[in-house]
Length: 114
Image 1 (tube, rainbow, N blue to C red):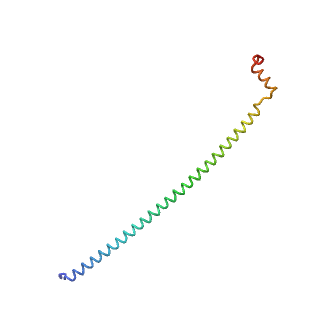
Image 2: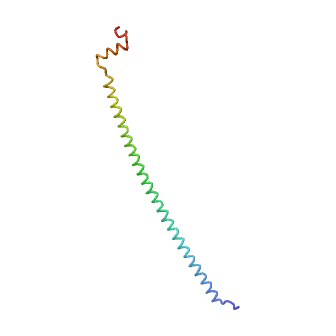
Image 3: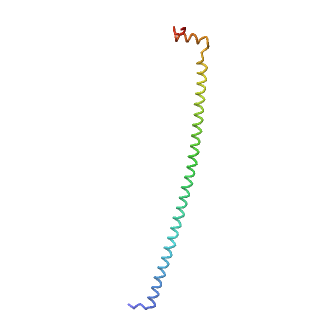
């Protein structure tokens, strides 16, 4: 076996160093690409979350407004029904004067005349 010459050893070491440098550069480029991809995906996810929250808030506000409008309509209907019932009772509760004496006499009996 022939002994390696100093020039051959230096050439081999230079090739090894060049391969290491190339590998380090490739690894660094891959690392940068991965970090950029992660950063981009994280930003996209945050934007999507913010958009979804804004949309959900808008829908929630819309539903609350609809529920309030429904409740207001229902309350107005109930109040109107109550007012109509009061008006009906007011008319039916008023007894004509001629019948009032008969009702009082029937209810109070002997006390009505005294």
